[in-house]
Image (cartoon, rainbow, N blue to C red; front, side, top):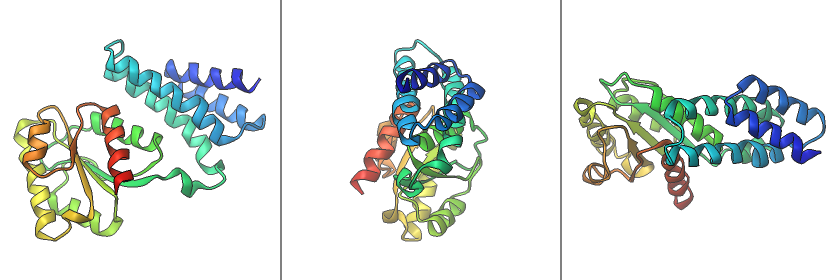
Length: 214
């Protein structure tokens, strides 16, 4: 019985049916299924399938975004019911699109994926100045800073932000990952970032790996 209920949630997530995921998750809770079981055996497996399909070019980024919203709907139901909410936060991330860049679709998707993986996310939004990133690190004390640039003309603001952190002696307080269309692993190494990811699933894996190491 439990397995079939969990399978229904997973199937709804794979179809991107946010409202159905929410209602099925609520029903599962009412039927006495542990919230952590729902998270680990219904929601996470669904997103793992989505990740595999995306990597194999079976689905597109828009499909991933829809599925992520469905997962977020389930998480919205589960979060206040988990016995120890602190356990679900495996680390804190500050994220933003750098100054001069107004693109946010990719960033928003990564925010949802980070939260789905149990990370606490502070989203600074778009067009974030180096000083604002620095202030967020001082105030929030995150484990990780994630920056994105979707334009070649704004890539330089990633390195400028890192220089700002170095000037304030904050660079060693946080791990840094970068992403976005024009960025590369070579660029990440050149500007002293800790990592680079070229898709949302690699970004989640990289974030968790860096936080666990720290």
